[in-house]
Image (cartoon, rainbow, N blue to C red; front, top):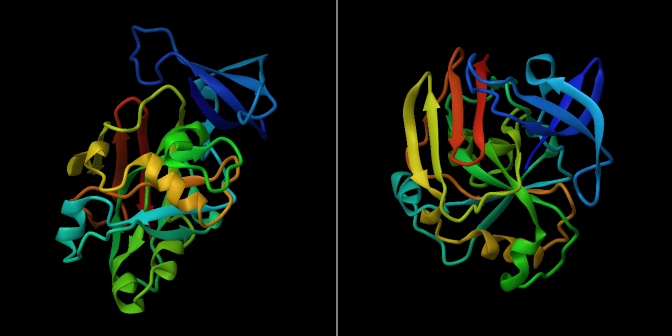
Length: 261
């Protein structure tokens, strides 16, 4: 199931997507059908059905918190001259950094170097605290694409990552939540203006999804809608005003955002 959050006629709702939005003119158009309630439990499918061309997709969730993992791909750690940590490096991005598909990544005047970081995002579907690894995947509602946008120069100068990772618009999510995929071995790719910058697989993670959920929940309570960014493969690089950045993950979809000053 693909669960989207969308707006139509000044109303915002969750919905279920039917069909393929990029199937082409010879295929039936995709639609989104609104649901009654929210996706974090039992819900009903309503009779309100809209062509995808008539709705605006939003960030699929507005999380209470975004947890992210640093240096979780060996080659990415190496390209920045860092060692792979024994335990996950856990940091946070504010909910105000979240934007959706088609929204603009705004380059801050405080930074001279802003990078893309394509990532698999885990959407938490239930309240958990100190969940063991063997049960951790029970907490997952589904997966979406993410871009952990980073002011690289500030990350280096500050010695910690809050400012570099926390600017408004620095956490694109979308285009929807896929609930039927296995996140353990998915191809992930980032393209800038159509040119591939990053290409890897989620199986290359140092710390897997279940381990990350268990690790994070040992620190803080995870609530429905929270998001965990699982790290980025090698190939991160700068983005500039006018660029079009796409994060694609097989079985999920493509998250596209333009870059603006």
